[in-house]
Length: 324
Ligand SMILES: Nc1ncnc2c1ncn2[C@@H]1O[C@H](COP(=O)(O)OP(=O)(O)O)[C@@H](O)[C@H]1O
Ligand SMILES: N[C@@H](CCOP(=O)(O)O)C(=O)O
Image 1 (spheres, rainbow, N blue to C red):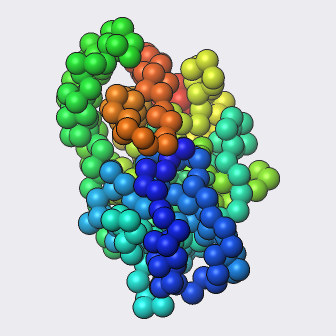
Image 2: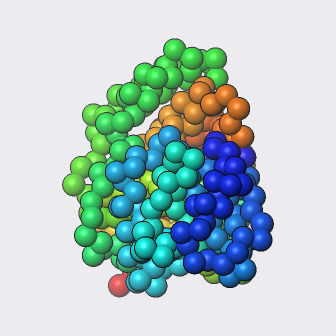
């Protein structure tokens, strides 16, 4: 359960007094999530999410994240909307942390996505890239290739106690990716963490996208590669090409990939897997004492890397030329 910061009732009441969201009926910590402390609030006017930003979120980035959610929502994308206080502020402080209240989105995330979910996700991702096209702010990706070596070095000495040989194979992947990371691909605002837990469905349709706290300016195809990793592997770590095909085709129906993006897809997918393996590994080895959080397993991404090491061409992820 991701509750790093306990919020006393009195502190919450004082914080909520600045908002016009009705009277608090109940609230509780949210079990899912690993980055921030989240509470669901039920008030006389509805439900809201209260987020206290923790370790990885830099306060200086919050105007980007909050501005982006407002921008996307204004373009019709279903994402959380920051709620303003009576004074018009979206960002406040609670228990020493930056804190916001955002709108609650209906829908459920799917644990085991099927082909139809992957298809819907591909279209939603392309829609997000399109909706973010005229967002004026920039935020370099703080977890792109330049950040991977420091993460690796923080975990290297203990990596082999997580899995034998993990340090050596990660070192080799890192060296290869540092030397060949694709630059100057088409890009703009990307979500950068569009895992299944960050996408809500109502029936077969995507009803909402949440958790924009890794959003940044980077290549669109890298965002797609993150999603291929998160959505298209089976429980036995076999890549499901049918799911990949459905996702990529739906993406391309909105935004066709350029040949250089297609050519880069195997490296981008490998890099995306390495990025999540490394952040998970560091978290796995550094669970804060007393935090109610279940760290995510880095080996899930080590196993995906085993697949990516063997892939030579985008076709193996399900890419095919757009007809017409
Ligand atoms: N706007 C929202 N509407 C509905 N549920 C939300 C919303 N934001 C967060 N949640 C719930 O809180 C959980 C954790 O949120 P998330 O932003 O993923 O946390 P973290 O950034 O800590 O990983 C989500 O899986 C979801 O269940
Ligand atoms: N998606 C990342 C961890 C970030 O967690 P989230 O709850 O913010 O999606 C991972 O799976 O490693």
